[in-house]
Image 1 (tube, rainbow, N blue to C red):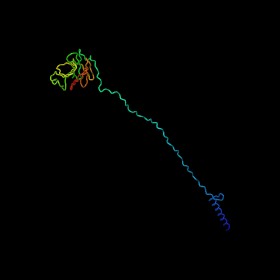
Image 2 (tube, rainbow, N blue to C red):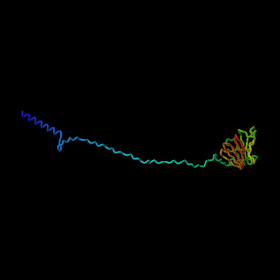
Image 3 (cartoon, helix red, strand yellow):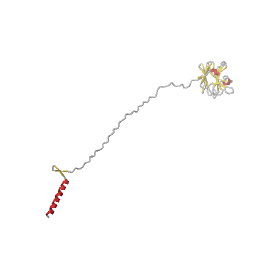
Image 4 (cartoon, rainbow, N blue to C red):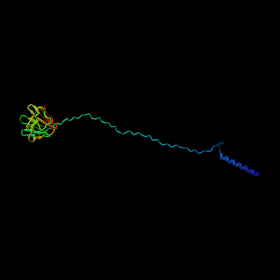
Length: 207
């Protein structure tokens, strides 16, 4: 009986010793808490890239102001081309006609009228020649006689050369015996010493 109690006492003492050993340790007589593992998390640092500014290499262009210089302007009407009068000569006189053939002119060596043009057809009969054109041979004409020019009515071909004369093209002029005549789309103009005439189908005038 006594032996069984001794065994129980011994077993209790051993159990107490094991519990005390497992629960704590003593340092300088004081219990030290059990160490707990600590995980240290180090944040990763991403390097920051600072954008660099590249200087612009675009060249600035300056638009030059428009030039204010002016070139000499061309004349409103081109100067007529002077022809060789020998190409229009018949004997001692010179004959030519307009491109349409309606106006026939002559610069004569002799006669009552030295320079003149006569028209096969006119739209308007000028004053002073009211009966001109009434007959088949009556034609309105402009002439230079002496120092004046005037309109007349001719019944024969005074200023008509062989084959009506050579064509004086628009923009051409002929000078012979001190008279210059110019052909244009507006008609024929002849001048001598500052006076002369202009004739066309719808207008005949002197100056």
